[in-house]
Length: 189
Image 1 (cartoon, rainbow, N blue to C red):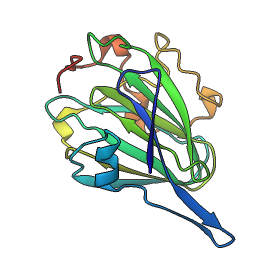
Image 2: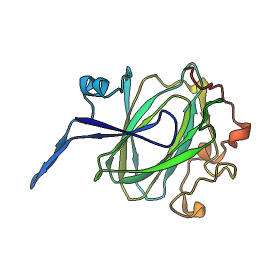
Image 3: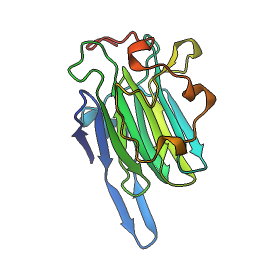
């Protein structure tokens, strides 16, 4: 069974699949197209990605791809624990400019559906975190964009002090939301 849980942000969802465990460990179907479609999650995922973050405090984000190369993402923490943050950047959306954070872990088996038109990022809370995600579009470097993780207008409450976060040079240079190159409109891809 696939359980779909609404978030406070329009169109973003938490997804839970059945987990069968015993003394040996567990088994779960992380993605079964037919079951997901029956639950109302119907995307043509075309690529699987995985990242490894070795240290706690690695922050990746906040990323998006501009339309028409925008991507829907379905992601989960395979090992470790992350605090995952999404920001609605679709002009005209009832939740535009709002953010929400979620704990995704190897223990809770939750997945996050990040719709097109959302900026996305996460910070690792444990060492050796593997994050796997499906996308419904291919990476296009010309469409690559981002928003500052510490934009004061967003006020994201990261679970550790900002000075302890580990970022790539690219992620340190993203503009604030008000200055970002966005072309998303609510109700359109």
